[in-house]
Length: 355
Ligand SMILES: *Cc1c(COP(=O)(O)O)cnc(C)c1O
Image (cartoon, rainbow, N blue to C red):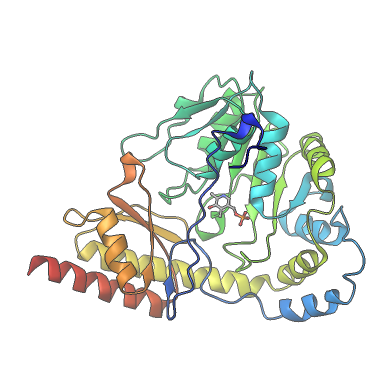
């Protein structure tokens, strides 16, 4: 910290992304990236657009908004495209939270929510998940500020039915309810069909996971026009050109190849299910994940031990030191080959401990 940092940031604890080490032959199962390359048409679209990089990007993302709106059954005015979905979440914290409107979110959820709250010095209302990590809508009655709900949740993978979110929307007509659908394509139930009914609903999505484009930084928010206008004011007050030309062109090309993305998602779901079965047969508890990762715990193998032992074998998974989940690990669903190496390694680790 330099002597110049504003005193209001002295206590700030920035978000810690999963590590991106440069180990050879690394099997990287720690940041929920797709094991599959982006759709084949994207590289050419990006190459062509690169010739226009002397010109600023379209701050309205007109073309991408149009194709996205078509695919979602929404109007372009009901969408705001951002630099990853982290940015739309950032805008939501900026626009809708303040001292009188604390941010509500679960104790076990996406680690970025508390960071934004801290950055903007917004009070938090932490609402613990139930014993089995499920979220009970009745715990979200009478909120005094916006709620941020990852659905499916991370790192548990558990999903809430749309009707449960509806209960939360109904019981908080004066608060924005942000439903973070980063993982919805892997088996969740989207709340986008509720947008026309609820002016207080903001759904956020990303191209990072189910569309194999984490490195591109593309996400969006969907909500009623007035809500989107508020968020757009945040965009135009920080960085109007938040989505660069290459990302917009890649996004449009990606939407034209949705069949490819759906195929990759199907593959991940199949791999998730057999990996879950394999881990259960080795004695793991595995939550019912609707995402592209598994959340697992073994009775004889502490979470940090499994993390370390796998790291020695060049397999990287995620361990969180937070007390309530310190016995657990989050494992991204990779390719079938990667998951076979993972399950083989875990079998070895368990046998070596028995011996
Ligand atoms: C990955 C993730 C995001 C952010 O994704 P971007 O790469 O910024 O689009 C948002 N929410 C959750 C719950 C995530 O896991």
